[in-house]
Length: 126
View 1 (tube, rainbow, N blue to C red):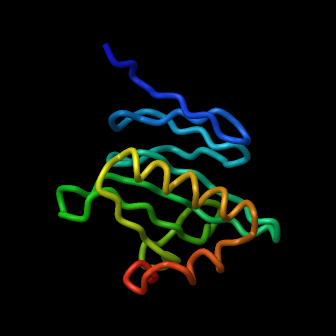
View 2: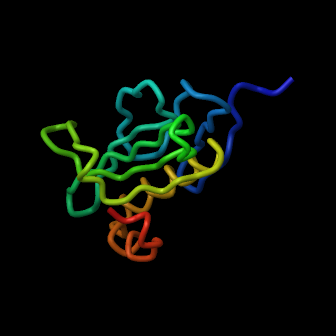
């Protein structure tokens, strides 16, 4: 019998990876926020310069986009507008999407978001 959550060791902490929706993903140093209905994970990541970004990963398979990880600047303490997204990445599986989510949170925490976004394919940048 498979466990509900698989555990993966990270150099900073243990991260729980969901096998289906509704489970939490913990990322060291990131602030968890309430999940929306289709979310796999949602965090506020703080860059070294103090800028805050919401990283949201959600199931968009019903729209044919697979699983989407979006990075948005935080506004008004939490509210964000989706069209202000810095970038969006599509993944084929929930596992890949969660790994992408974790990578974006860590990239923001390291102050390397701009560098990371420049390396993305043009279609992923908004």
